[in-house]
Figure 1 (cartoon, one colour):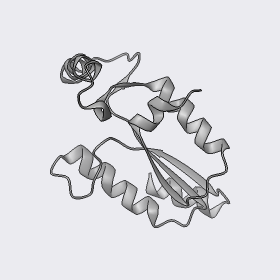
Figure 2 (figure 1 turned 60 degrees about the horizontal axis):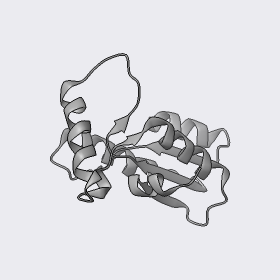
Figure 3 (figure 1 turned 120 degrees about the vertical axis):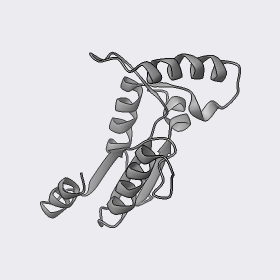
Length: 126
């Protein structure tokens, strides 16, 4: 990912958008979140005019493969967030993330680096 980002910057890309994960942090004890956080940190070192880091919660959508733990998590989080608890963990559909990516890619943003939360993606009326 970092090699690709450096390459597109070198050939003239001024914007870069990256789908990371809720909880991403280079300091996380969770391997997945740690790696995502390290990638975010490395991307911030590349001087894009705009870097959008999207941190969705659990992704909903159609997949060919099934992941039992993820499927259970989706059901649990839908129930928990439906009653207003832990809203930031509300599952989000893949198409909602894609629409948010297009929205932010097309917009003229004032910030050079921006982290877009799952809640913010849910709130977009696209």
